[in-house]
Amino acid sequence: MTPQLLAALMAVALLVAVILLLRSYVLPEKYAVLWILFSIAAIVLSAWPGLLDALSAFFGISQPINLLFVGGFFVVLLLLMQVTLELARTRDELRRVVQRVALEQEERSSKDD
Image (cartoon, rainbow, N blue to C red; front, top):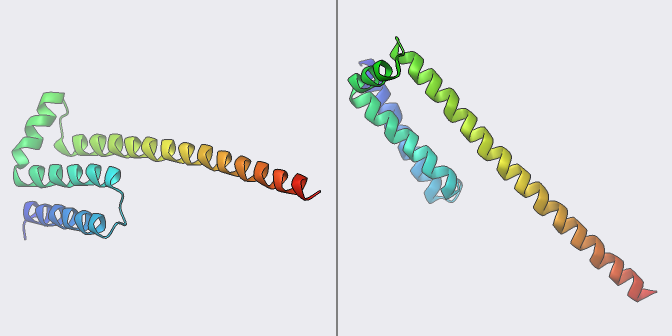
């Protein structure tokens, strides 16, 4: 099995896995879109390896694999930023809910007295 065929099979397997996770409501849509785009990009790059050579030459990177590493690192940073923002939103929402519950409990205890 050639590396090109192995890469294409792995990219197709990733796409199928993402679609199955999306259909079973395990993976939210906003994350699924990113994973579908990444798997399609992997399929395209594995089907046409000359495209990676052309892109690396365009950006002035001598080795195409270095372009993949830089691109992968950038994608991981973007995903980390998205998860961090989601965590901050969840934390703020949790704080509001806890404050609301505390106020309702205080109102109940003052009505009981």
